[in-house]
Length: 140
Image (cartoon, rainbow, N blue to C red):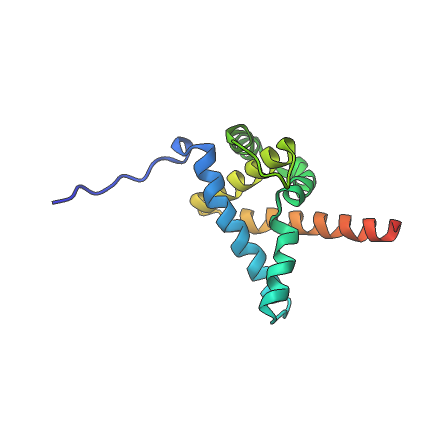
């Protein structure tokens, strides 16, 4: 007979594991938001989702979140940020590390079952990114 596996305490998850899960959580949140906006074309949905999940944009969007994080959330963000390994060519080391920290935070909140907080922070993240994009368009 197989022994049941014990689920680790939230404090036992590595920053990398939290970020791995958080990447998927963010993808679902973004897809839910875009589909909820009535976009039906899969190609357009896929292209738009990149604006929210690309490491450089996650790093930018994090700026809107930092002042809203609790001490606990900030510690989880740092745990994920410090766990980041090799980065893709499409992002700087700093952007990739910050994006990994953001993903770790989202993975942590998902595991914690705090969907209300997750939705709140995701909303702030989206408003910040979209507001920053609108501001950049105005400057052109």
